[in-house]
Every structure is written in C-alpha cells, then in structure tokens.
Length: 431
Image 1: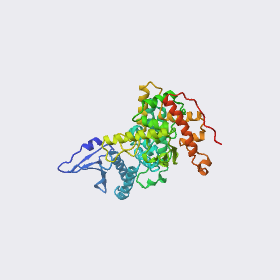
Image 2 (image 1 turned 30 degrees about the vertical axis):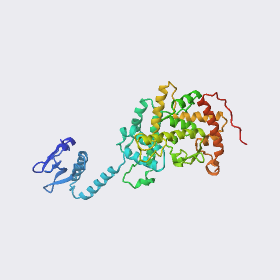
Image 3 (image 1 turned 90 degrees about the horizontal axis):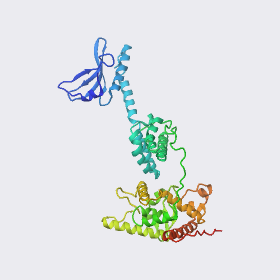
Image 4 (image 1 turned 45 degrees about the vertical axis):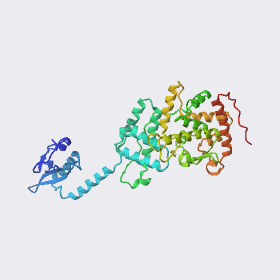
C-alpha cells in the first residue's frame, strides 16, 4: 500500500520503474519513478485489448489522495466503456483550475496581513495592536486555516486560552478584531487590493455568532488622589516613563498614545501651542492643546535629556524626531512598555494599581471640581464632538476657553506637587 511517507522516500534507479498500489481494489493505480527520482501517478487499464497508461500528475503537484480520486474517476469511465483519455485535455484543464482555485484561497494570516495594511493606509492607530494580537493570539492557533473554512469553534479555540487566564477584556478585544477582519474579508471585492490573486470567499462571519467573553466591560473608576499624584510626580522626575506621565498630567490629560508618539515638530513655543495632526488623533481631526509654563518646563527637561543621550551615543542625526524614541526599534516607545513600567512602580511603592488612562480620568474629574464645563474638558482632551453643530457648523477653536481651563489645572497641579494644601477655586462662569 502506498503512503505519502513511502512516496517521499522513493529514490531513482538506473532505469525507470513502477510500483502498483492495490488500495483501490484493482492493480491499475500506481506510481512511476524516473532515474532522476521524479515520482508521478498513473492509471493502467485495458482498452480494445491493448494495455494503456494514463498519467495522473506529478507527486510534487498532487497529493496521493487527489491522485486516487482521479484514478477512481477514470475507473468510472472505463465501467461505461469510455476511454478516460478521450477527454484528457478537458479533465486536465478542470483539475488545473481547481488547483489554482485552492492555491488562491486566503488563509487567516493572509487576511490579517491585508487587513493591517488597509488599517495603515487609513491611518488607523489600531494597526499596531492588531499586528501584535495576530502574532500573539491568532496566528499560533488558526493562522494557516483557510478563511472560507472557518467555523465558530475555530474562533472559540483562539479565545479559550485567553479566557483560561481570566483575561476577559483582552479576549473581548481579540474577538472584536476577528469580527472586524472577517467583515473586511466579506467586503473584499470592494477593497483596493482586490486585484491580488487571493480570494477569501466569506459570506457569513463566524466570529459574529461567538458570544463576547465579557458581556459588558465595567467603565473605569480609578481616580488618583492628590497624595498619589505627588508621589508619582516626585518619584519619576527623570527618564521614561516618568517623562510621559508628567507630560500627560501637565497637558491636561491627553491620550496615552498621543503623548507617546509626540514629535518635536508639533510644538510651537512662539504661540505656546501643541498641534496634533489629524492622522495622530482618535477623532481624525486636528487637535490643539495650549502649552502652559509647567508643560513648557517639562518639555525643556525632556529635550535636554534627549540631547544628552544623542551626544553620549554620538548620534549622527542628533536627537530623534520623537520625544520618546524607542530603545530597540525605530519609532516611539510602545504603549505596553509604559504599562509594564507602571505595574512595576505600583509594586515597588505598594500603591494601588492604576493605568496611564486613569491619569486622564483623574485630570478630567479634578477639572470638573474646578468648575470647567464638560464641553471644554472634552475639547481640551480631544474627544470627538458628535452633535450636528460641532461636526458641521461650529468652527470656533475654543482656544481661549481651553487655555483658561488648562491654566486653572496647572495651578492646582503645582500646589499638589509642592505639597501645599489645595483649596478648590472654581473658574468664574463666562458670560
């Protein structure tokens, strides 16, 4: 009996030779081995009293199972007294088309590669996280699976190890990216890179029917107390990640990603404005943050440190374009590096755990106590204003109000850092 393992071990001899296989119930199916070791499948049969051989294809192109399937088709034609080689060309073309179709079927890995490329073309910041999730959680389990063959149980197989570690929020994120990528596959014909030979052939999204591991994610509640802010500010006066956290605090609670990826070209110290381009903001709109004196002091310290590091490393091009360049790879520091540093900080100082996003919530909450309206707090922190007026009509920049709000926060933060007793003094209401 022929097996794939036996076929791989076959060697060429001085003359070509044949090996017959009786698996199909007749002695006609087998393989031919040439002197140079080339293995091909054949079907031997009798027609009009003459013995004939039909070449079924090379072992390098066809599996043993596929060759046996072709042999069965040939036997059916013989049972009808038909010569299987009469329609040889048509059958060969059909088999070639089927082979090409199978080769063009997209795998999960190729889908995510296309999806990530599309996210990057759209300027989506989530592209880097999708790439990490693909590598860590998706590829090891179903990366080689054909997308068209995916079933809900395959999606559950990806989520199961994450859920076993009680990482329910993470499992929700992974599921969400699987849903999004498979929806992308469904609309593949509408995408610019549809011209590639890959086809996903997805009609229904198998991830959509898989329940979320965590039905509802509780909103964050952590707000740092004044004494915690003081410890954080004082203990991390120099170096990463203290520089990032101090910038987030001093700038009125800007987003972690926006602070981490900040570039020196975005800061105008003549007009005292930090202008984040649309492709770096979550709202996809230009976001302008007034620079306070405290923020300017922190930026000055960061620049002095980057300059010193560049001199010590004898960098030819001077300091990096980024405020917080990564140590290993080109580009800024990664968000997960900041998270790891914060966890170590909480352990070292026996502090209740918190995240960089909790700093953003802390600033927004404290500014509310200072009398800053929710609308101005939202605008200062770059929230998307979804009402019709804000989206289509109102083009006022609110710089005056934002500067007044961030200066009130700066005074409050300076008193925390200096150890003075803070007495909340609300902003006077504007007419």
